[in-house]
Image 1 (cartoon, rainbow, N blue to C red):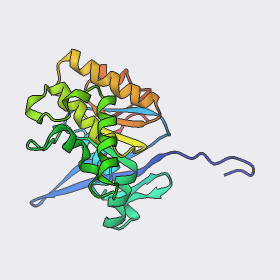
Image 2 (image 1 turned 60 degrees about the vertical axis):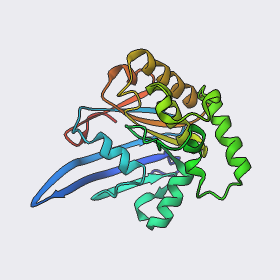
Image 3 (image 1 turned 120 degrees about the vertical axis):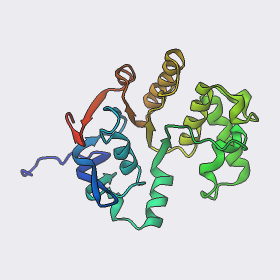
Length: 231
């Protein structure tokens, strides 16, 4: 770096990340080599076909899947240089995740599902309840707190999943195909909600195979065969 040149700080940096799996005697390469960064407040779409490595990449970003090589830096913190306990604390503080299949607990109410990430935070029960109801209002489901997941539409279940992901107020939201199982009108409503959250300051990284979803973000990273084609 030249004298007097200011160092650029990125919220997330992916440095030469690769990931292989052993399947019997075979080695399957899910991510060959990926390098990119995400800045605070961005809404990034990661687009690629099935098998391109995008969902594996999202799990690596979320501290859930140790890469075979490379570094993941979040707020200058080397995520995979942490112990497993430290990484769990990191996820609780920094990351909210919307899983592809919602992963709501069927026998818990909407409110109880949303409160799940707060179980290990030490937040008092009354405050947990208030935080969960507040975020439920934000996603437009304040009147359905006592419903069970199977009493909701697909779009409503997706909104519950979003509420659960943001209830701890993480700075980063990871979304794996958040509109993949929804009709186009419902999907548009979910994407509008995500864009609103981004405008309020939430950094969002969304995996999708749908070009229509990408237009809600401000940058798209294309992945193919385990490589980033754009940064």
